[in-house]
Amino acid sequence: MTLPVFPETYIDLLPEVRAFLGEELKLYIGGRWVPALSGATFETVDPSTGRVLARVPSAQAEDVDAAVRAARQTFDSGAWHLKLTASERGRLIWRLADLIEARAPILAQLDALDNGKPVKKAQTVDVPLSADHFRYYAGWTTKIEGATIPVSTPGMFNYTVREPIGVCGLIVPWNYPLLMAAWKIAPALAAGNCIILKPAEQTPLSALYLARLFEEAGFPPGVFNVLTGYGETAGAALVEHPGVDKIGFTGSASVARTIIRNSASTLKRVSLELGGKSPNIIFADADLEQAVVGATWASFGNNGQSCTAGSRLYIERRVFDRVVEGIADEVAKIRVGMGMQAEQPDLGPVVSGDQLNTVMGYIQDGYASGAQSVIGGKRLGGALADGYFIEPTVFVNVQDSLKIAREEIFGPVVCAMPFDDADEVLWRANETPFGLAAGLWTRDLATAHRFAAKLRAGTIWINTWGDTDAASPFGGYKQSGHGREMGKEAIDLYSEVKSVWLRAD
Ligand code: NDP
Image (tube, rainbow, N blue to C red; front, side):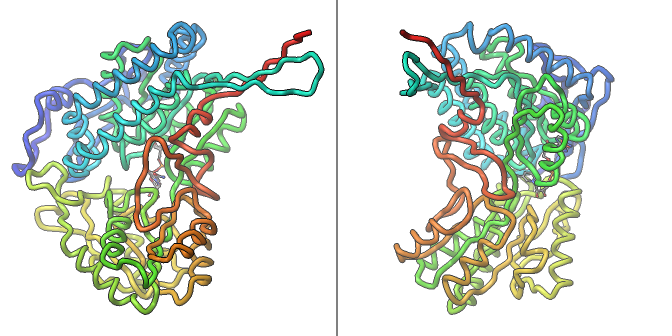
């Protein structure tokens, strides 16, 4: 394929990235690179320019079937979870992490081109965190244990073992393409499963490149397979396929509902990491300088395209104006630009034209409902007019009942709302169908502990925001998901428990 003409302001593409984009990209099934059986392809677009980057195969039901057969065969043969020792599996996963690290510049350019995020952020945050994830779970392969159970049945010995579930279909979104895949692949591999990864249609490139690294690392064929394609076709076929034992999904609540419905006929295991409308509460006694910077990046980190975005900002009334002014000053310093430009911006575009329309629709709705922006509110034009760039936007004069204060916008928009007392803000913070994350800024230890206990969310951040670690469980209460990723919990999420009884007398 002929490469698009990139803007002059772009850093040079690495020769490997150029070559990759110029190739006929293929699905990775059973250790082989194959086109979609129908020959169908689709375009992936650079959101900074709106230009086509590459064409990738559009997997259909028959490709899903081929991938499931390959993964099933490998799983049933025991080539991964039985014939290799736990230590050998761990070593392979570690080797994959080394390769990810060694190819960080390539993976970072692919994610920056596909998603629009600043390449420096991709290289210093997304890729190292992905490698770290594989390393953490490489260590787990030798530590997945059962238990001996002191049953009260005379003469019986009872123990448990943890076994892999089988074939896992992993469906991931576009906001952190490599990292979201790593969050699922690493524990699923460590637990001994075979995997079919379906990346988001907007960001398929790093997933295809990752498959090369699996090949290079020497994983048995069929352990890891990649199907690029649309959710409604490839994703849905994966969910419905009787040969898939588990679906691990990150994305929207509406697709999660479809997945639950479509998995009902096979009753396969489903784990869900969904969105949020996370409350971020600033008390007047907080270190306000720290809180202002923290709240700015809680809202606008990754352009607000983060399931944990602190998009409902509650500020104690007596410091409300001061904090909002401080945040507006911080936002004014944010440089928005193309993720691959030499002079690196802080934020890139949103991921697609559809996402641009969705976010701008919310902004218009905010204005129409009486909210006022203290900064931002517009699409960026000029040299950025062809891309999907939106000014980081801070709304005030927002009622909790407004759509912009209730729904996940998944873009650079935050609603700042005053509160008068702790009980009131606790109630308002919890008054949401979501429960992924929540945060507070205070110097008062009693308030910190009380809120940590009473906020209904899977992660609580106190005087900080956005920290995650491969070792610490992450997931949602309420409609923010089922199950926990990361930490030991993710091993549980990707394994079955078997109870074995033995007559011992
Ligand atoms: P989706 O939930 O549509 O996409 C997530 C993944 O699910 C993609 O790989 C998608 O495929 C796939 N998918 C879509 N439909 C189906 C289906 N019927 N069966 C199986 N898989 C399917 O997210 P969007 O990209 O549409 O984003 C919309 C909103 O979702 C955002 O504005 C945000 O609110 C939320 N979101 C939340 C994320 C989070 O981290 N929690 C991440 C991304 C989005 P494909 O895209 O290839 O068609």
